[in-house]
Length: 453
Image 1 (cartoon, one colour):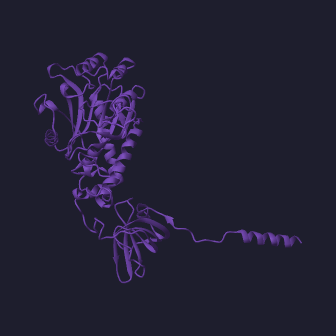
Image 2: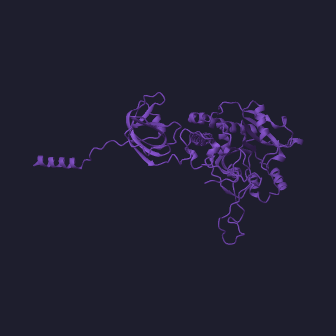
Image 3: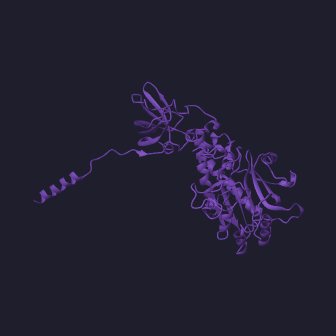
């Protein structure tokens, strides 16, 4: 009897056991697949877009890319496979075995067992053509498709890595990340080049403001960072800013990204310049390490160990005349075509918040710009005017006392010497990649007369 019960229990256990199933294919990105060492037939699944199709008598070759790397993964399949829908630009899911490639050009290849076309692409209608290398100017008319090219793919991967590198620098340096507002009532630069914000349908009385005061898209997060620097000694922000400049130059956008930092208890431009230099070198070194192939594709990059020199504006130009792009590029070239600091600008040329140097007839402020090859101004910064009476006089002369009473309050309650800077992120990418036009280093460029998508 006991034996029968044991047998029945064993039968029940067998009947409820799951049937053995083949091991599912591991999903890999193209980048991870290419990094596999000593591939020995592991079953994998790769998803992406076809960059090339080549059919021979017995073998079908595909190159598949998913945006994770510049290099594509070679897929090898039997020529009997139905390849009628396999065209340049179509999306696919490929399952098969990852094996060592006999070719010296790649380490591994994917021996396909199943290829599924997820989305068709008619090569006749597709504006991007196989083996074509269209100029960046041509690609701007296809903002919804240009990211599929090698050039824009590399630029956008570098942009992503540079973003991470900047955040890493500030985190490692002990900065607190502050989300400054996009909508503001302040004009930080005082230039009046603002986009005003209004509801699309007027609420109540048309003459009323939604916020009870005129509101604008931010031109800088600096003033909000200065508020935060009264509680945190090191703060930074990284986000979009907006300028209503009627310009289609190679250096200007209506919407762009700014990296801005504010540091308390800073009393010299030299201290500020060290942080600027550190950010520039650290971010560039990390980008060159993380995606050297993408940087190399752009044919030009800056070495992270270059010595950044200081150069004083008054030694080369007429005093009291502001620098224009051609002046900035001349300065860089004059100093050996390397990044150059320019310090101590005339007070009359700069905003109210910059610290008065009290230096006699020249009357300068403690301002600093970092000029770089091919771009001109990349960083702009200054010590801030922390002395209440100096700031009060500057605001009164500009007629801004009432609007900036809160800013004066910061000097009344626990004020400290402080300074900060901003870096145009797109200009930084232009600098390290050698890209001539700023419209080619941002996914969706916005400039006067153009807001596609």
